[in-house]
Image (cartoon, rainbow, N blue to C red; front, side, top):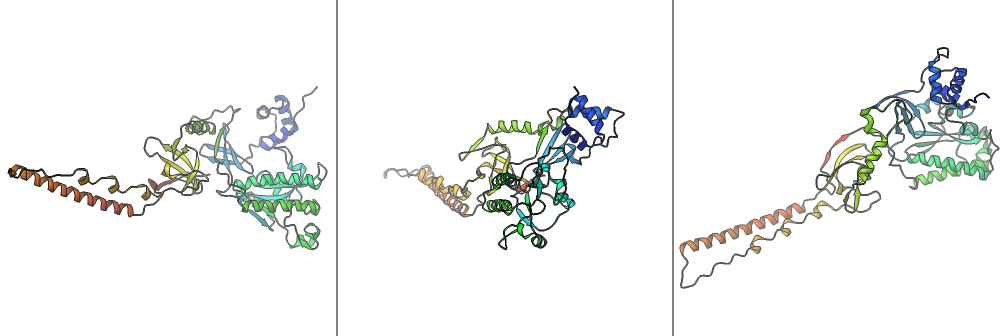
Length: 444
């Protein structure tokens, strides 16, 4: 009995661009018993094989070396051989939903950033295996199809591989699509919905109108798919509800997305020693250790990696100096991307409404803390008998003590006046210890 080659792996190796010889790929997979890496080694070592065309994935330079780009909706993954660098996509704020009547080209979509375009999709291409090519490129798929795993999200509106669903079944499908879009919005990705133009409305009014009134404001399933108005309304209501949730604050921005350097467990190439400390797995362990040793201030446990608020804006604690009091720290401002120095008592928890007390309120007047010296040490003149007039030495001493007492009283009064002036001077309630001294770094 001959060995059965996995056909999906054939497409996977073809996408690598190593060779276009399908027979050679079959030989390699049969020889390695469907092990992709083994098949590639077989192909490259076979002198009679097809002409290798090299890896067609675009090269991307990084601080960890040059790698090959693997792109998804939510992140760019740079394959470094010994590991991969995961760079999240998205803006530093919630994504937006936009309706557009423009018809885009695949080149425009390719050049776009932090944007996902919706288009009507068929079930076969939507649910094909990861490295398998598309079968259909009609309609909007001509422009969106080449980017259907990276920048163009397909709403399944055409059913070639399964029966057309009932409205209730279609509702479940649309709900799944909306969950995906909700996640993309939280990552800071914009969603663009195709909108019908005048020609669309004139050509097929039954796909957009009920009793002469337009009720459909999208172009998903209104063309070749031939969905009923009931099915189209399910998409319409889903999009409108999602937009309302976005406006009402029901969708929260994902502040936890971060760049990650991950090692390949099955790679024959070791991680370069100079990058070992940057590995995400190592950072997680270090973060766990630091989290186990927090600094408690105002009943809040602060630790490196914690997301909190500084002057009302979100930041991540990068370092804490536990050797000084009060403890100082450096934080990365998530919106601006810069790193600043501050003190832990000036930071607040996410969602906290408690205001930081102005420094002026926390400083007690010096005059209240220092008791007047004259009150603490009352100088009582020595009583002398009338019959014994003071000797010259004693009289001189008494005069000096009284003079010193008067001088000390004047110093206390001056100190009290100075304290009042200092307290009355407005103080910035969140003055950081080197607030203006910061370094801008590369941010995600």
